[in-house]
Length: 200
Image (cartoon, rainbow, N blue to C red):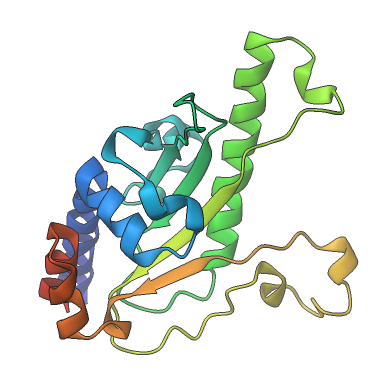
């Protein structure tokens, strides 16, 4: 049992290292995450900020990544960033508590963002015009079995539909490598797709 767990951890760290590479991460987002803004994302637009949240989340989240992704307007100026959470720790088996883990990340990111903005402009977070950044949660899943965990946070709460007006809710993306055929991955012709093909 310990040996299996050790192998699992090694695979998780390996996947984290892959997504830590800006070129591979950009390819992963363009090809696999169905967010229109990611269609033209470039490696230089991706900033890894994972270490910022380690003190709040603890060692169990070490194999996960948090990216700050910058977008540009038609004049080339940077817009407000969007955050991406990629969970890799539970990617080989279905984890039914993944939505709760993602919520922890999201809350940490928003609280830290508020503090960062307050340091630049005191009182800004209490103003009507202030907005927190969007966060796209993604689970990179290599398991052969179907992902059967509810992708909505509300589904993890007892009688969630009955009390939906009082429960925070979000949906996370699942990138399951077995949803892609070998031919489809080969046709992409980039490094990230070849890594996904190898991991299959």
